[in-house]
Length: 306
Image 1 (cartoon, rainbow, N blue to C red):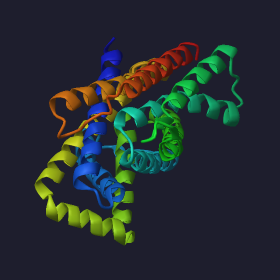
Image 2 (spheres, rainbow, N blue to C red):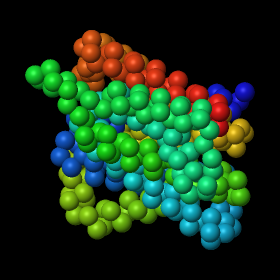
Image 3 (cartoon, rainbow, N blue to C red):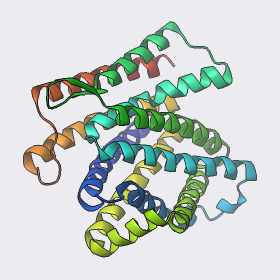
Image 4 (tube, rainbow, N blue to C red):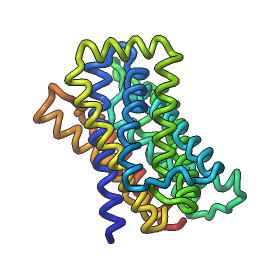
């Protein structure tokens, strides 16, 4: 069961990074937060490159087709991060993370549309359950106690989930032909390369990045380095878990990220409200718990019959 514990470590680490992202974007990067965080995340991906080279010095022997596909994975990483951060700017981590439960739904849809794979009635029912769960957190109560659609959250997190599904399929396809370390090397190299291009070509992001670094260099560097290390360790554990067990089984642990985000959010709200404070009204708690429970049930049914 080594693969299961590896798979469980990742959602917990990802949940911690979700809250660090929220703290960064709301406290340190109020101006140009999305672009600044994308630059930090992509450029700090370079940290992983020498580590990977240490474990796998023959990464340059990968064939061209694998390199191109893994480069696309790196580009999809940037797309996921951008959509996620745009949504995170205006919403709680415990809300937006529910939409990542749509990842296996999109994975099956891609297989149906692009590969001609069939979908069983049970899969369709499970997909409907997951989508119903995400619908529950797609609305909020405004100051007049009227329902209001979380338009930005819904649009950007749906795009993020679709990109994540495509990325997972590509990574698995290439990693089976190559190995985990080679696959991770080219993915992180492309992330760092895209970050460098953004820094050079997008003046607004570059200026916000340099300003944030100048004004809060110690806190920002510490949080960002910690954040990226946690995220990279999570990626590595997932990559090895995928190599040890079928993707569907590894994905069974992924819904736990939403629960970890919710639990950490409540913990911070009660004990460290200066860092993060969740909406803890009766409506909000019922909404979040219901959505988490329903989407998790749907995800487990979906993966168990896949």
